[in-house]
Length: 433
Image (cartoon, rainbow, N blue to C red; front, side, top):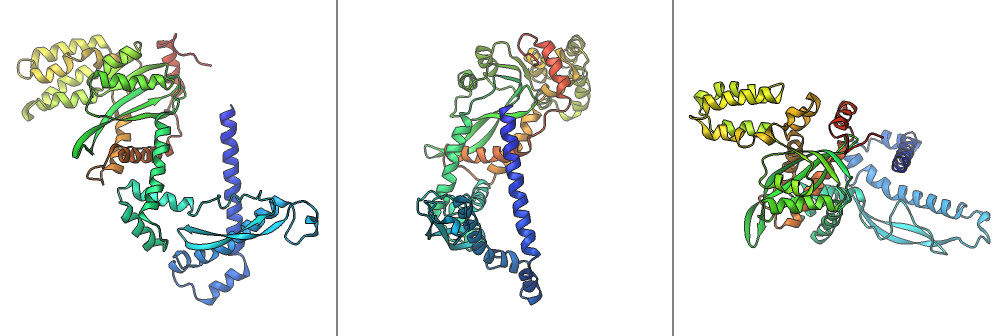
C-alpha cells in the first residue's frame, strides 16, 4: 500500500507540474506581446519558432530568470524589495552566473543566492550544466549505435550546442552504474512463469570478434505483470555449470520459487534449475521443436508429416498425444529418425503443458513472450558491427530494456482465472490473499 501511495503522490506531482507548464504556455500565447510578434511578420517558418535561433530559444533565458526569482521568493517568503523581509535573518544576496546547455542552445543565466546560502533551485540542479532533456537525446543517439564523435557533431549541427566527445562518454558511462544496479536489484519471492532464451551478439574479446550469447530471463509475478529478471552475457560456458550460476543468481536476489519455466532447449538448463528450484515444472518450447523437426523433412513430405505432427501437439490430452506420437514414430521413424528424435528424446519436457488448462497452456507451450522482447534488443544492437567490450553491450541492453518496459503496465488478460487455476495446481506453494 505504501508503494501505491508513493506512486500516486509522484503522479499527482507530475500532473501538477504539467498543468503549471500548460498554464504558463497559454499565458504567453494569450499575451499582447505574442500577438505583436505574430503580426510583425517576422515568424515565417517553424524554424523561426523552434530553431536554435528561434523564438522559443530566445524565451528560455528570460523565462528561467523569472522562474528562479519566483523560487527565491518562495524560499524567503517575501517578494524582492518587500519591507516584510527586513530583520528576517535572511535576504537576497546578488547572484552568480551559470552556463547552461540545452537543445535550445547555450546561454549564461544569473542564479539568485541568499545570505545564508540555503537556496537550492529545483529548476536548475546544482553543478548541472546541461539539461536532462539533452542528456536523454545523447543517450538515445548512443543507443542506436552512433559514435561519440557522431553524437558531438549531431548535437552541434542540430542545436548549436558544443559538447566534447569526453562529455558524451561521461553521459553514457553513467548508464553503467544504472545497469549494474538494475542487474543486482532484489527480486520477488515467487514467479508464476519464467521464460529463458538467448540472442547472439558480436563482441570483441582478447583482440578478436566473437559471437557471444546473451541469456535473458523474463518472468510473470503473482499479479500477472512481466519483468526482465536479468541479462547474462556469457563467456563461452553455456552448459549446466553456467546455467547453475544464472539460476543461483536469481535465488541470491530473493527468488524462492518459480512455478513453471519455459525454455528453448537450452543445454544444461533443466539440470541447473532442478538443483536450485527442484519443484519447478520445465516446459520445452513446442514451436521450436516443430521448427527443429521440420528441418529434417524434405519438401515433398513436409505437408504430410506436419499433418501427422499436429495430431500430437494439438491433442486434447496427454494420453491422446502419446497415442498419436506412437503412430508418428511407426510411420516416419525409419525414413526420418532425426525429426522423430526431436520429440521422442524430449517428450517429458515437451508434454508438460498437457497437464494444465487451455489458459495456462497458451502461456507456456511457446517462448514467444520473450522472443518479442528479443526483437527489441536486436533493434538496438543491429547497428553495431561489433561491440568493443561487454560493458558497452550491457549498457545498450539496459537502455533497450528501459524502452521495452515503458509500456509493460498491464497484466495478462484474464489473469484472475489463471491465478486461481495455478493456486489449485500448486496449492502448497502459493496463496491468494
